[in-house]
Length: 285
Ligand SMILES: Nc1ncnc2c1ncn2[C@@H]1O[C@H](COP(=O)(O)OP(=O)(O)O)[C@@H](O)[C@H]1O
Ligand SMILES: [Mg+2]
Image: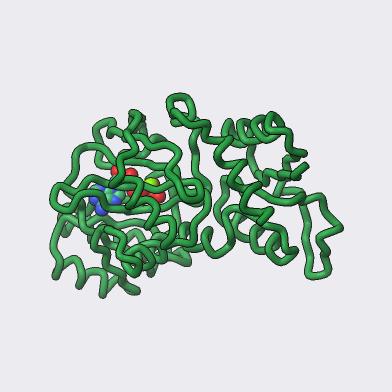
């Protein structure tokens, strides 16, 4: 009987659903609280009950990433793998990998000082979208429509001086309908997809009031998602796409611990079942 472990820091509906599905599938299932587990250089696999495979489901990206490194140190299969989590957690790394693997993605400019970011804005022109390279739920993603807005955002970054504030990620603003697409890719298939229709603003995140509407999984969507998944190393992924008026589907982001509670209610496939079965299948190879 495969032993499935679900690593969490906060139990959301998704983690509950994964636990219940794993039990229903007959697996020995346990939840592991990342906040109360200590690991050291002296640790051995046998010191813990990490089972045969771990699904990393931490809300905190950095907690999940660092815990994943420890699990891989102990030779425990974990989804997603450390390299995949790292590739997806940082939007700059994701953009570079997508482009490198010929996956359609928006034009994106990287600068490493406020002065050179200003130079890009002057040269490329407005509007451009600025994003923190690490972040989610649309936080800090801002449409820079003109020089005054850009100056203000750059000035705030100068003042706040966080570790990533000197990394400027500036992206062409895609001309698209007021929606984007979230697809859930598990291994070599897309198991579900939805449109996220904007509640009025520029961003379409569900966390910001975007309305989820079931989206048909066309061959084009499946193909783009599979090449995007391969580009970052594969696994269990939330792939965000936009419908560019000119170029068709473009991938702008890949999420490492994907939320799916809304989609699970309407999807034809059983999302948690697909995730658990994929993890068990891949770890027993
Ligand atoms: N280049 C872009 N052009 C137009 N809209 C964008 C662009 N990039 C992001 N958006 C909008 O902003 C939302 C949040 O951006 P995203 O890159 O997915 O960051 P997050 O990780 O915070 O979700 C997207 O879902 C989309 O609606
Ligand atoms: Mg997103």
